[in-house]
Length: 136
Image (cartoon, rainbow, N blue to C red; front, top):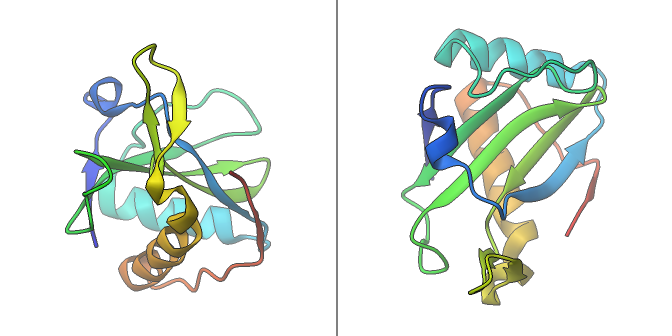
């Protein structure tokens, strides 16, 4: 897996309507650590969050991963009410009416989340363990 950062200038074009929460990880201080590392590596976040419950959101295109489910995969790494939130469009697509529907890959979302945590652990040098609630 490889992540390609989407800067704020390109965020709108990378946004998909099917990005859904993979996990909220509640390890104390983890969201702040991840934010600090991402800011050091990539600078300004992909989106400017103005609310106290969400202060950063970094968006990435997923490269070098199984894309048979979609032409492009997107990952969002953000904070939400003090938790680290990992989100992706993995396992989702839009139907002809542009409504989100599950794909055949939906059942593999937890495996994708595990691969993402592992990749982020290596990239950021921060252990990101699953002690979270997964969301469909």
